[in-house]
Amino acid sequence: MADALRKRKLRASLKDVKIREPADVDRRLTNSADIYAFLSCYFPDVFWGHWTDQRREMVAAILNAARYGGDQAIAAPRGEGKTSIVQCVTIYCVMHGILSFPLIAAATGPNAEQILANIKYQLERNQALADDYPEICDPILALDGTAQRGPSANFRSRYS
Image 1 (cartoon, rainbow, N blue to C red):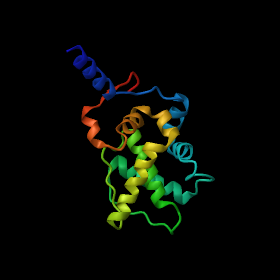
Image 2 (cartoon, rainbow, N blue to C red; image 1 turned 90 degrees about the vertical axis):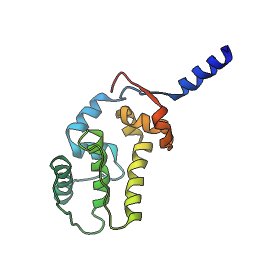
Image 3 (cartoon, rainbow, N blue to C red; image 1 turned 120 degrees about the vertical axis):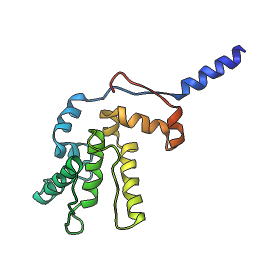
Image 4 (cartoon, rainbow, N blue to C red; image 1 turned 45 degrees about the vertical axis):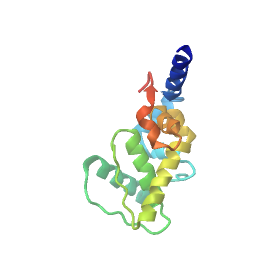
């Protein structure tokens, strides 16, 4: 009887997911207020150098559509970062409660799957995001790629 109780408590404790405090609250607040700072800070390998007017217009159009809806298409030459901008602005919108269930549309199913994989990769592997947004990234990391673990997990945080 005592052994069964001990094992039950052990299994329950393994389901507990502790959510850390943000590592750098000032960085998070600063970058939350400015989407371009957010993109440059958390995705430095993607967004380095000067923000061109065309890229700023793309970011603003995507953010506007996320907040207010709309049906605007964005056209730009190949290599201008359209897909990267969409992926990273989507992450910004999810992190800040602008979008709960973003829709991924692409020319083909495999392209859409790749966009989703890129977003998931950032949420699972981007250490700066995980450090500053632990209430979002820690539960994702705790699932370890297995969505079935979600319903039985217990999340505990003083921050969120």
